[in-house]
Image 1 (tube, rainbow, N blue to C red):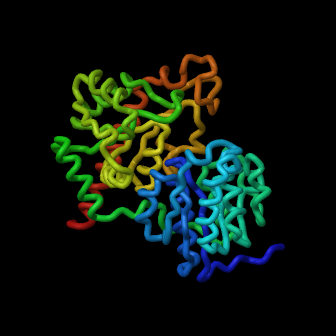
Image 2: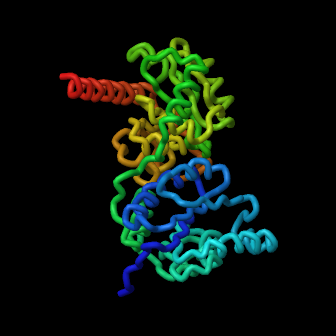
Length: 367
């Protein structure tokens, strides 16, 4: 049996460069490590572009931005000799005592080895042969299991337990900035419902007209007159389609107009997040915002909004979950066939629950 690892006063490199949702899932691991080892210097290797989300976390002492385009593919790190040497120097200058590789791919495993850390922890079944680079190989739970559970199993090798926090450590100034952004967009108040209508896979996307049908019903039945569309600039056309298809709701389009921290602050203040299986879904869940997620090809047990899997609405298809980026010949049946009334019913129930909770909090403070 291997001896426990003492990280008091030591330096640890956490490798989790992407994607947005997975990086958000790794935040509780950072909290857990710092909670167990308060004097630990924790550095996080993360893709440039996502570093702005991680840098303000008080549990993270250092961020090492990673330009993924420099090392694409399995042999990218080996092909870009000069770039690799430069990045290797950066890793070795960190003088890390230990590495925790949450990514589990050849590239991340290689980086763990290049750091020269004496202790390198990763998944025993890491893909692309990454396991070869680890000094400690951990048995993680078998699939289907949520990413958070896998990361927790790896962090347990450093005696990290259940974290007391999972949030993104937002500042009051960031919340104020989000409120100002809403005001500038013309938000007049009322229930704040954020909507992320897109995802990286075409198979994950709920049709724009279906979203519009849900939003019209929320406007009619719950007074959600101005739902707020969020996400990246690539959702511009989808957002225009939703706005055009709405007959009662008047959505505000903030897609592509927020940084990641602004987005997190906006979602933190929302009464409901309505979304596909997306990165912003995980941000909302991390902040404790009621999150209604529409799922088709992916498995909520693996990638659903953590702690809120009961809020997932799924379509119907005999191949679900196929886990395919492109539909395997079913005409996107799982998403296109999902009745908007099913989504609306769940959304209304969550809004009522939020209103009831606010009423109880008010009575407790003023009763």
